[in-house]
Image (cartoon, rainbow, N blue to C red; front, side, top):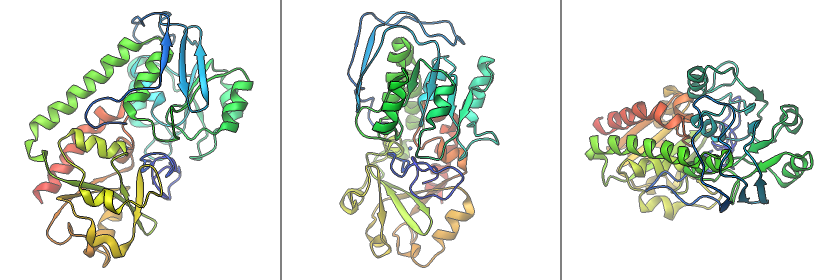
Amino acid sequence: MPSSYRFPRLRTAVAVAAAGAIALALSACGGGSTTASSTTSSAAASSAASGSNTPAASGFPVTITHAFGETTIDSAPERVASWGWGSADAALALDVVPVAIAQQTYGGNADGVLPWVADKLTALGAATPALLPNNGTDAPIEQILAAKPDVLLAQYSGLTQVEYDRLTQARVKVVAYPDKPWSTPWRDVVTITGQVLGKTAEAETVLKNIDSEIAQRASANPEFAGKSMAAALYSGGSLYVYTPADPRVQFTQDLGFTTPDSVTSLDTKEASFYFTLAPEQFGSLDADVLLMYGATDDEVNTFLASPEAKLLPQVNGGKIAKVTGESEVSSVSPPTALSLTWGMDKFVDDIKAGLAS
């Protein structure tokens, strides 16, 4: 995928983790929010002034349970850094500007800043945080420590036990993923960020507003309801199909689409959110609609014109929708507190164009 933790083997400047859940990796978008990691809090969070770098002081201490144990945060963090995908967006959506964020070459500008992040920083009148070098796998420990964070948000990342230990030994409070790397539902990323920052109520409002926008798009497009959709990415000579665990798939379910039985029956279980579909099985990928992701239209069109692609049922008289462009693909790979609304209209328009073709 386009950045090693979000897209399988997509050869781009940033490797998003095929290990990450969309990364084949765009969670739980579908059917409402999921339960976040368990927490305990001494008080309810209160709202904070918009644009402040310092979260509200209430709601502490708070304990976040994650894959590496528990992290207790005694008071509102003053210096928050983020690593991985989505946690910086969640903090910014809560009007907290991190001191350091992961550089995102795929979909980002020349500096590696994603467009929705740049827009939010401008709206807050804030400077760009320190950009952490991002090869899609290894956390840049020294650069993170140089930013002197109180807390590192890494709920959707590939952080390892070794990296976690190095950071915590340096007295950084680290909030890792609840279960598996690159698989935290995007809504949970927002919820956990709200708990860490003492902005639980504000995080709930962010999610309610996003859910309202999704519901409006679903209501405005009743033709989506009940149609089966298979989502896939072609890269490096292979076709990767996203499973229902992938947030991108869950987003299409929120819009009314269903996941066909063929996706689950063909799943090789090679990763948590995608599988590689062998050409000899292309004819078995039954779905009303095939949603193809790609960095460019040419890339997707070249694949669809290939002899092997003609084995796909949707190429022979079915419906194919295309979502292309690095920023557009990244906005749902997986979605975040900022990216989903940024790219939602074009995403819906691309699907409508595919259904009309």
